[in-house]
Amino acid sequence: MSWPSTLEERIDRLESIEAIRQLAGKYSLSLDMRDMDAHVNLFAPDIRVGKDKVGRVHFKAWQDQTLRDQFTGTSHHLGQHLIEFEDANHATGLVYSKNEHETPVEGGADEWVIMQMMYVDDYVRRDGSWHFARRLPLYW
Image (cartoon, rainbow, N blue to C red):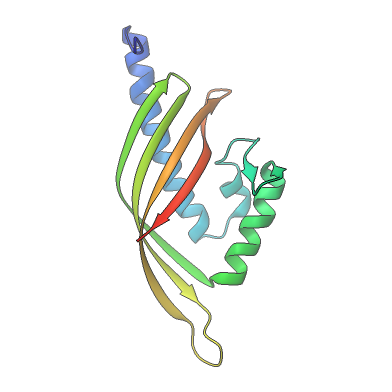
């Protein structure tokens, strides 16, 4: 791969790495704060949702339903974040995460479940901003 070769391209790559790391941090914060508008805007406008839906509107509805039905609270803790570039506007990554989810228990108090996991990501830069093109959670 010839990118990056110039000083400007090398600086762009460093800035891109930081922007992608911030993307992962903002993902965790938006989930924990239940800010679905901020959350869905971390994803590309043409994000696939299931087999036949595309777009942030569908993604927001799915995320909102998933969070409200399954968890009353969350706390995400990120570990190492590895990023590899395909070119100046496309990258892939792995993010380790230890997540705590507060889940409703029928007839009792909510309980916290600890989840060890890793995210497998595809990132895309559009109009100068990095977004998730795809985010696949892998649970241990």
